[in-house]
Structure formats: structure tokens, C-alpha cells
Image 1 (tube, rainbow, N blue to C red):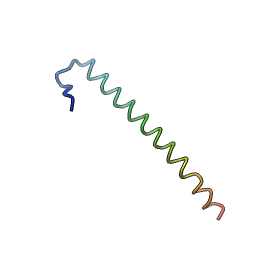
Image 2: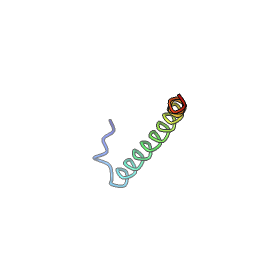
Image 3: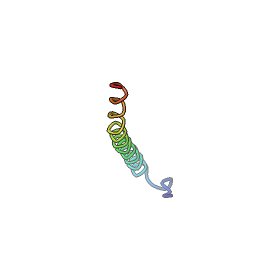
Image 4: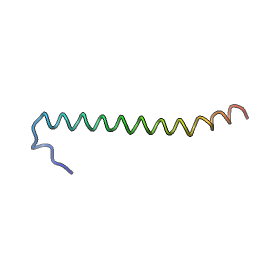
Length: 48
């Protein structure tokens, strides 16, 4: 792992913002894929 403790506070803040942004992107893509898979299943159950 990268040791950010020795870095300046600006570098630490940028790393935190980058990590949060990456997490948001992963969740956005993941929930989009889940919705794409789950919607037809739910519709089939509704109309059964």
C-alpha cells in the first residue's frame, strides 16, 4: 500500500476525494447493471 501519512495534507485530501469518486463510479455502474438484470425478472414475476 502507498503510505500517505508522510505526504502533505493536500495530497491526502486529493487521495480521499479520488477514492470517494472511484467508489461512486463503481456503485453507479454496479447498480445500473443490477437494475438492467433485475427489471426483466421483476416484470416477469408481476405478469405471472
